[in-house]
Image 1 (cartoon, helix red, strand yellow):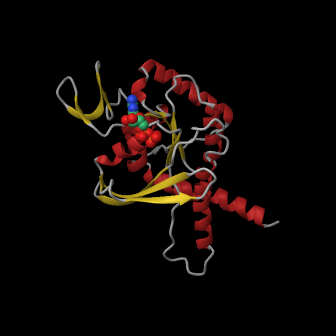
Image 2 (cartoon, protein in one colour):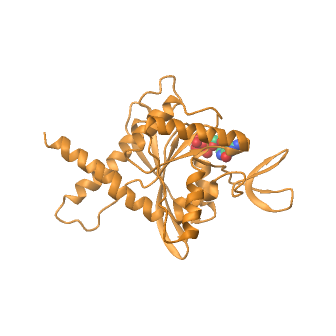
Image 3 (cartoon, helix red, strand yellow):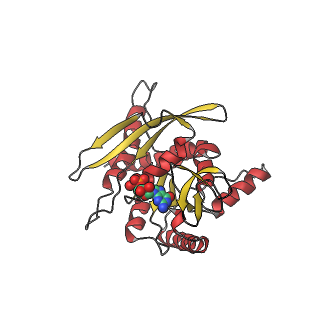
Length: 270
Ligand code: GDP
């Protein structure tokens, strides 16, 4: 799931992430509309991806931006409801006598897009992320990394980390495989660079040294999506669809779904 204010490049990011790996990505869209007093539509896209010879079927949940109104209170409620609805629906299916063929639409990762202000998190971000992190594996990302310098980005990351610590916002952290030193080192590097910064672009551009890459063209040169010096796009992709995919799934089951179930059991007792 991708969420955050509108105009931060969520849709562009998803298209960038899958443009090379997913078949039929663009022509496979389906809308999931939820009735609210303001129209907020959650859009589901099914995609199939081939990763290291395995076929993976996944669903992308694109959420419309919130924070566009003078009063933003509750504009993110449909997203929280959507997450809870999926846990609820799974729980109901689990309680049926025949549990084969369950439909599991629980969200395994939620990318929360942060506006690249270079300052700190907004109160709205804090409020929404606090609610998200108890329901889903939360992965905050700094949008449009090409609009900040490396120095600004580092400072921004530090400030975000300290606000999240102070506010008790728990983000998803990939597990370190202690018995595999090379992988452990790579994961530690990934964790150190969180929150990830991303650049999204669906266009191929030519770099000054003649390479054709996905990127954004500027007068001074090219901001490359997959260049580790420009953004953490590769690290994030690694977490999402390579090394940590299974962990995201089991963490959803063991941590977030269990928490939802326990809470529901508790409230239904009375
Ligand atoms: P959404 O509302 O969050 O889904 O945002 P969109 O994906 O529609 O993008 C909004 C605008 O931001 C578009 O004009 C994109 O071309 C632009 N954009 C998307 N990603 C980036 C990025 O990484 N850097 C910059 N500079 N612009 C971006």
